[in-house]
Amino acid sequence: KILENAGTFENEWGSYIRTYQVYGKTIRCEMYPGDEKKRYFHLYHSSYKEAQERTELEDRIHAIEEYYSKVAGEQYVKVPSYEQLFEPVVNDEGILVTVIPRSNEIRKELKLCGYFALISSNEMSAKEAIELYKRRDASEKLFRNDKTFIGNRSYRTYTGESTNGKIFVLFIALIIRNRMYTALKDEMEKMGKEPNYMNVSAAIQELEKIEMVIGTDHVYRMNHAITRYQKDILKAFNMSKESMQGVGDKISKKLKM
Image (tube, rainbow, N blue to C red; front, side, top):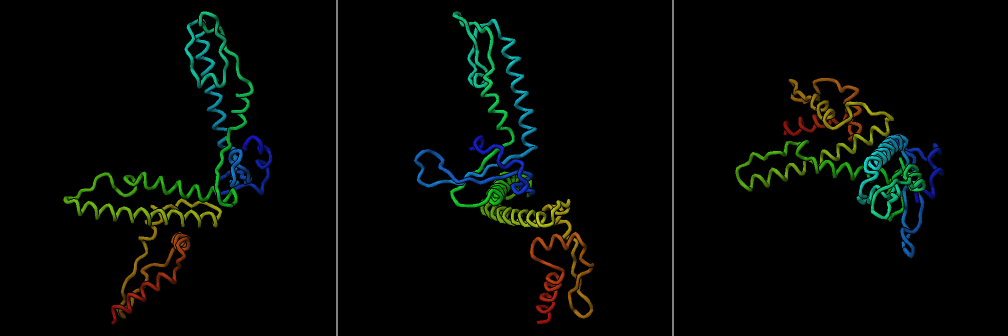
């Protein structure tokens, strides 16, 4: 599907997905002959990914050429992955004489550099599909690397019950962290930039600076004014300076009861 649609969307600005710096296009077709339910193929192209993959492919081709030049005149040992790009010429005694590049296959591999695809059964745009994929990918990486994020490398518990309790708390913490990551990422997309204080760790540090103090009238108020950075972070969580003060008012009312 990629080769069939190559050149139809990579230079169309309306197909550009700024958040992920890719061009995208969605087509609907059968996944295989006779497929009763047509799928949605979301095709993407990245200029950065193309340059990277093309360099890696060219290096691989040069490495294969060097390998064949070294073993030329020796008993040929079949290497299937190499034969996808080069056709070996072997004499009757099984000696490698030379190799011929498979130009069509090499050209095809070069054309595919920078492209990737996602497939969905439900109708959605290329932008919606990659956003859904990236969020799920982020969640999977988050849970896979929980030891790094919240110190799950060692439990430091004595009983099985306390270990189970700690695992449960860590699991809830990971869910909250992932929700914060998603909210901050969505807000950065609205902002059109990626400030260094809009990641989970930095956001928590900024929010920890917000303090409530009780006055002589037994009313809780913020000790310092909300900074611009804190306003941006709170906005990602649908909160504001007023909502923070509202928390203080609720605490004050409960203490007076």
